[in-house]
Image 1 (cartoon, helix red, strand yellow):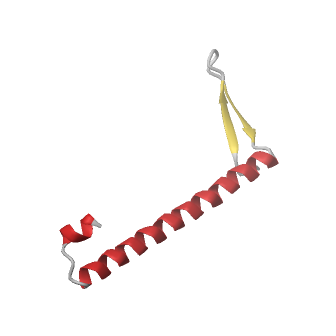
Image 2 (tube, rainbow, N blue to C red; image 1 turned 30 degrees about the horizontal axis):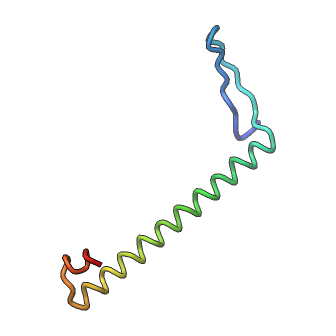
Length: 70
């Protein structure tokens, strides 16, 4: 049994059929999943770095307004 299936609906008759993804479609889907995970990890790393930088600026004595002005 295939891991991925596509649902096809005939809009005239309402008949629903399913077909298995081809090997190329599965590879494309899995590549997209890997890419999305990489983007998520990158965004989380940026957010962590930003929070660290803001905390360091606050530790230096800058006010919230001064930090926002940067």
